[in-house]
Image (cartoon, rainbow, N blue to C red):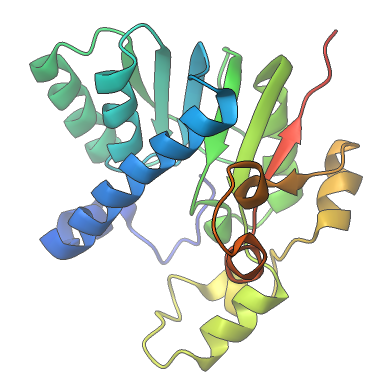
Length: 218
């Protein structure tokens, strides 16, 4: 991913404490639950861009061992660690590679591409959307969350926010709207939270917008 140069993501993951990792693990399991509801099963192939420790992918591999799963991340140390864990667990359908947005130099396409908690750090967010969408097969789905004006306001009001890590959002440089997404991809997004029947989906979507962009068949 094309992150601000002030962020060393290898160092970030080395310094992440166990409590935060445990929260991410639970979030990964919940994401698998939501994808199972959305697809009424699970997609045959899925890529998670900006996967970090890949808790969602490891849980998906455990539940759906026949699914082709790829994790892409900018931090080479995380990719190496994930590969080692996958080998230890015998997760043969799970692969990890180093890749960055907005370029996303990836030569595969997937039924589902997810990108969670990643676009917040990408300056050229529209090019990133185009790169992500190009990796979705016809009839597939792109799922991502993103910062908007409500995100920025919440960050500005949070005294504990890291101003270097969230520099782009705080400066309002990479905020998105439904209209901007539709303009970039020529497809109207729809709420992921509503599609997976999340309780109070309107409130959740305001604070943490997450959408699906469907790719037409053919």
